[in-house]
Image (cartoon, rainbow, N blue to C red; front, side, top):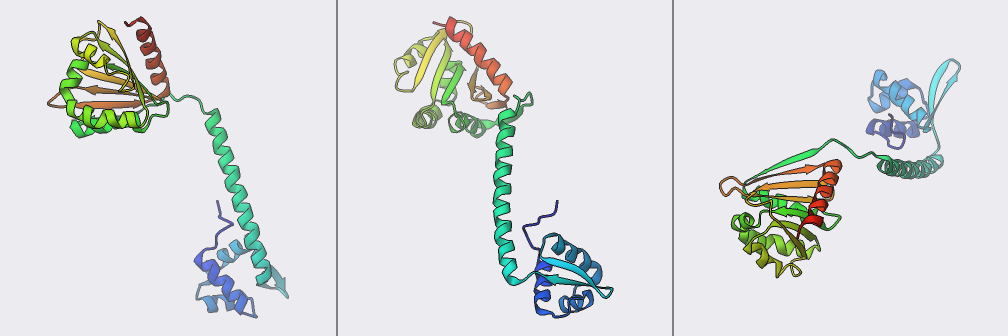
Amino acid sequence: MKNLFVLSENEKKILASLYRLEDYSVGKIAKDTFINRTTLYPILDNLVEKGLVSKVKIEGKTIFQPISTRDFNSWAKRKETEFQESNENLENWIAEQNKSKKVSLVSEIKYFEGFDGVKNLYADTWRENDEKTIRAITDYKNAKDFMKKYFSEEYFPQRIRHGVKVKNIIPESKIGREYLKSAKEFLREMKFVNILNDLNIEINIYDSKVSIVAFDPKNPSGVLIKNQKIAEAMKNIFEYLWKTAR
């Protein structure tokens, strides 16, 4: 699609030539601009389409005349208004597409390897979390052994600073009971179940995402799945477990 709001360098050169010349024939324009006729004709046609040049025949000879400089200023202001209106219409159209967009079944999947990769995955849970809530299923014993220093010194303070709360389902254990004492301080609700022992993973569900981290000391890794349908299903499963947990 042609851009009627912007002038190319050749269009500016030709327009400047037309303002200088008294003879508006193609031959004179070509000599003045050093643009060959083959290239010149389509550029002149573009300027005609944009309303900056008129094409007339006088005694069988085609000549091109520019609009006056005063009319050019009016043209520029009019095009600026049209451009702003076009942008507004486009923004409104995009907004309507977002409103009518169906929930996608297509997933965006990212993989994270190593301790630094897993740290980046955890950072996403507080950095990209509009709901400010994480539904977590955690093997607490192995999580504590896995990255205790990172959790206590970096992750928990960042999550708390950003006001992201956690609803946490964990296996019944002495360590879990100890963490229960500081749950309020860490913006955490906790419930216990007996079916999640030694999972060696943590599942975090937030917004339209599900992250899974494997607590492997030698090869820590994780996966982030961004899919509204999957996230909704996992949230429903979590809430069912939450209601039945102690």
